[in-house]
Image (tube, rainbow, N blue to C red):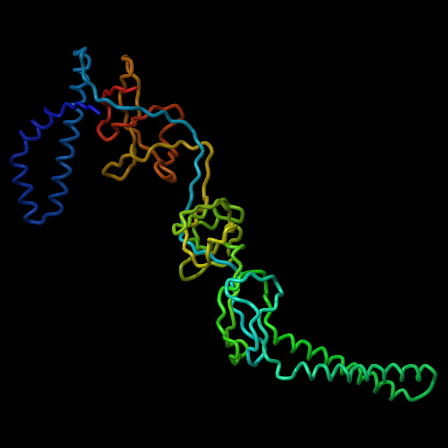
Length: 388
């Protein structure tokens, strides 16, 4: 973009009055005189600002006297309200609660494994059998004895109903029968612990123990079962977002390794603030119909922490900053000539940033015309021409 600036008078004036100052500056630098350098800087800035003001007056006069004035060329952008959604991006891990390493509940030898790695199984399916060391035979014998105790109790009860026999005999027969029933129930439960069953529907991911291995309850792992259907992303969010991020908040999950992104929402927020990193836990569900998503994959969780349907957004590249750290942009005011404007330096209050835009909270209004292309070249109170 063509841009003509009248800087020659400024350069001449600076060169004309800078000889002694350069020598003085060199001496201050050599002496490491911080206060002196700051005073020198302020003096030069004041002189430069005065020269710029005078230059603007000269340009204004030239514009009035010269009908063939050549102006700086810019493009414009009109301020219009638009929807703005801001997201906080957090590093997260993918997890599932159905990822279990199965341990035996009964001590003994691994007698048989009924599944293979990669095999899909239903909930409650028999996965492996531990040698019961004769427990099944004991149960069968006890069941026979229990049947006899039941017959004895029933006969004693019939005799008692006919006033034959003693009450003590009836109570003894009843006690023997009920005791053996409870013993049978206990043996059945003990025998069930010799079987390793699937706690949920899933896939056998790994078989750790071999047939014939001696298993110890809670110590010897047998196999791992995983269900990849109910996956979720888990992240720790700084506590400053506690009031913005709640259950149901919109979110998205990006998995770099798979180059996939999923739209989701916050399913759960933790009720505990970690005192070490001052954060709370959140999780968001992820669909996994093709089972390509695996546990412990890293991902980026973006959570919507702010929305404004009537936000005034401007490109980040047109926002400037002065020496005091104040943000400003150049607004355009129309002149008597068509497509010729006068720039105005406007200080603004900024809100949250998007990818390439930023929300302006104060300083501009709907319908204002701003300098777009060429914002880095123009100055305050400068005549410019819009390229349509």
